Length: 353
Ligand SMILES: [Zn+2]
Ligand SMILES: [Zn+2]
Image (tube, rainbow, N blue to C red; front, side, top):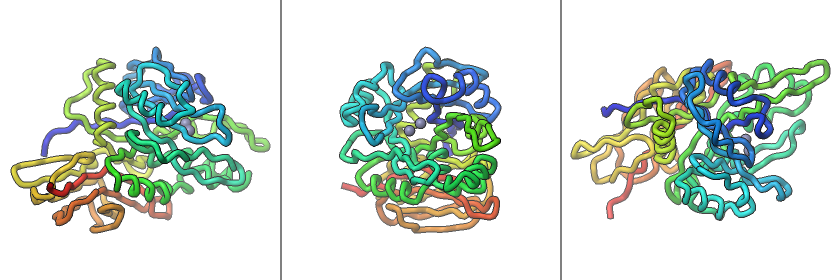
């Protein structure tokens, strides 16, 4: 197996520059405590580029989450990463926005594409303009978004604020289904995001910061594989992060129920060909898929959304007979329920032409 360097990051979060409670220094410290290598800060409709750099040993990158502030109801939140200039003025035209990010060499991820409403937080911010083309991918699992559906009343809301881990199970099934549908049209990279704000809420006598940054940085993370290591130079290391995200050399890990470091999903074939998650391989190469997990789980291999192989354990091997989009999921029991643990980007096994 080739050598890949692995880094753990958290993408999608807010500071005092938009509606978050923390400063860049607060976020970097929380990221360090949670053991992250990088974070990508995405304040609403503002690009605070001069805050980029290494802080507390964490690579702090800055993108922005853009939406049209004039549009009601509020929809279409787009994470724009790796851009040089603020593009919020294009928010009214999602396709023009995506094109402009691409022209700057950046990446676009559709944030919380589907959200569930709940009595305590009835407003949702889904993506609605699905005619757009050319975006990099979607946020498969937004942790804050996956908490909101449980806020059915003040008391459950209070329990949720103390014990979120008992409630959250997995990415929304409708978002997983959406991803499989989009994958039929072409490559779509999935990432996970925390959407951390560290808001302070008052509930009766209680006033507390629910879901602090450090807690959220231990939940759903985006793990990347890079061909060369970080060297401590911001521009160099940022390029490695963005290239991994662009290529889909990425898995979404629910690290709260078990560290997902050292997950691997790769394909081998005739002629010594070797590719990893996010890559393509021709079916004529007699392809075999391989996976290794850091601890036992129920491992599902999906082809074009359908389960084609299932094992319990830490490894999976599968001889591919047909072209298709193959992605891996791993589920583990934790706190009384089976929960989604690992969601890799696919290996695209292509027909010969
Ligand atoms: Zn959003
Ligand atoms: Zn957000």
